[in-house]
Image 1 (cartoon, helix red, strand yellow):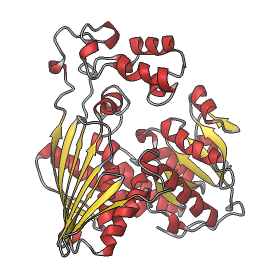
Image 2 (cartoon, rainbow, N blue to C red; image 1 turned 180 degrees about the horizontal axis):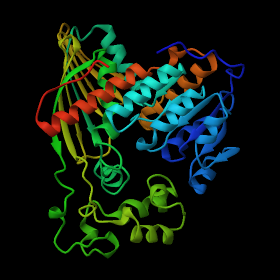
Image 3 (cartoon, rainbow, N blue to C red; image 1 turned 30 degrees about the vertical axis):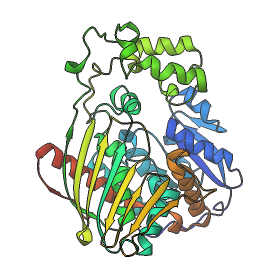
Length: 421
């Protein structure tokens, strides 16, 4: 990255922050800011939806991000708009001199991703992508084990992302990431996290990739006999694992208007939720949603240094933590997001390491990664030093280029080389 803008006099705690995009992710980061008034202060939100702006609770509100580019009103800005709406605000806000935290993926195409990275680096602003898995205590634990040398030379890694049957139905069948033309390939939208994590924990670059997968189950020909277009009209709904009433009604009754109910309706009453399920996309039969993103995909990768890796993302699981296996010349590692089990071939001993007591766990947002990312970003902005950021432009573009190469490989049946930049 080129040299950073010199810190302005306001670059000291509390850092002032504006949020662009008041959806689920923007709301999570805004909540962190409001919970840490000694470190950061939320000064503005930009979003076209009045209800979403009101939920963020910022003192200044805008229907659009453009006023923020015309007049810099904060030290930093968080861009959490839809993936397809990242390029223009990111480039303009970087040019305006904001430190930037950008949701992943940066953009749905390779050309747009490169344009963002080039523009941010040209502007010379402090930048972090929301690769939150880099910041989790679990990731720190895995890296400490690898750095200890107990595994010897790293040979191969296997990573499983179990999306969860109901989460997949919510987000990738009925939700905004269901069609590539409206968002991006599922591998990029959901799993550029994972490709980034593989490179981060191994310290190696993904150089070549092959991939297979597709949309197997959520198709019209798999709709049960006697099913209807909507769950509320369906005779077989009580026996369907993807029943919308079963997913959303108990959540509202037991926990109130929280995610994923808040994606379905802004209202808090059960009658309003039922009306949204009757009329909106979240009440449609999962076999009749016109979705086209994959529900399973596997990757085989060659990394620098002769290391190999595999990655599987699949819808048909419980929603649980990512599962890791790492094999070295002198030992192996198995991790489940909360614990890491290691066997030392020299001694034959098996040791279990647990995420440190008092640290964030996988029960927290992204295993504590959301909070740790915000902590690192705000610290970097406050000091003007980028060292706290683990997910700058160079790191972010690598995982994106690997995802684009994997999609080319999947669609063409080829082995693809991942560009270095």
